[in-house]
Amino acid sequence: MANITVERRKHNRVKFETVVDLKLPSDAGRFISRGRVKDISLGGLKFESCQELSTNELLVSFCNGSFLDGSEIECRVIRAVKDKLSYIYGVEFKKLNLLDKAKIWYKTTAA
Image 1 (cartoon, rainbow, N blue to C red):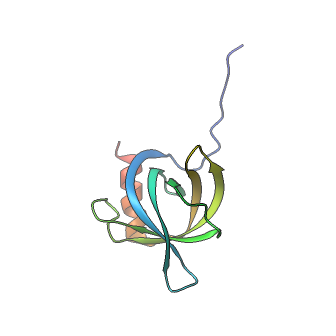
Image 2 (cartoon, helix red, strand yellow):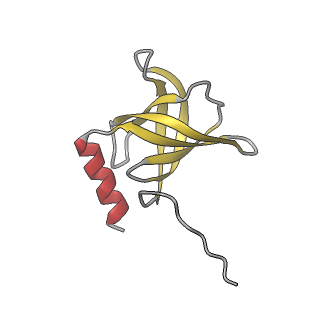
């Protein structure tokens, strides 16, 4: 019998690597840590950080050099896994403006 895997995601994920600043949305955007994005979709993204985060609400600020350069997106942590030397986080977008949504849609569908 063949192994069948059912994809439960609403949105297609694509590999995407860039550096982001992680901030607290409730504390005037206070810097928490830095992270490295691994993939992105219209629903959220996965990133890696060396620091364990003590909050489930984040403001993800995209650094120079990415197609989302300068964007800040409010996110909610939905998955956190301790890797050997770092933490892997899955976040969903809480608030996504129309321009950022269009950029992410283009990035994830124009492959």
